[in-house]
Amino acid sequence: MQALQAGSTKAMKYITAIIKPFTFNEVRNALADAGISGMTVGEVSGFGRQKGQTEVYRGAEYTTNMLPKLKLEIAVADALEDKVVEIIAKAANNQEIGDGKIFVFDLADAIRIRTGERGDLAL
Image (cartoon, rainbow, N blue to C red; front, side):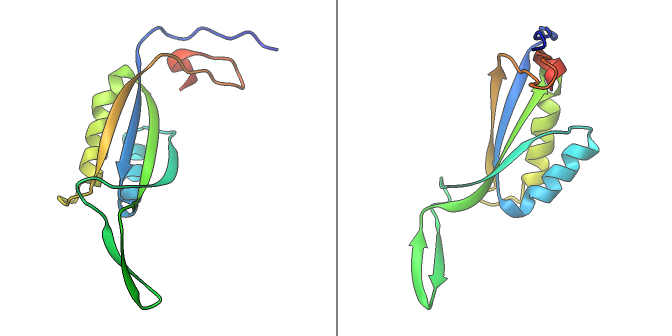
């Protein structure tokens, strides 16, 4: 087994964004255009101030509290935090309730499994 390789000790950020599904392509393209590659995307459901929506299923109207969203997870070097947040906020903004949220966390470490690289080298 290969020894783990130490990476840079620079701080890293873990950015989680909850966005409307139809804004995903614009967000992804804007990030790619800025040279940001690599993200994890998952389908999630949630609610906030938007409070849910009315649906019609087999002719019956019902209200659901949970709305479909996409959750983006992106790990970046500390220096890219502001740029990534700005890109996501601009591309996902439709000036509507429920456009989403962005959360930024400090990331203690990252390890590339294949090579053992650590820190921002693993990103």
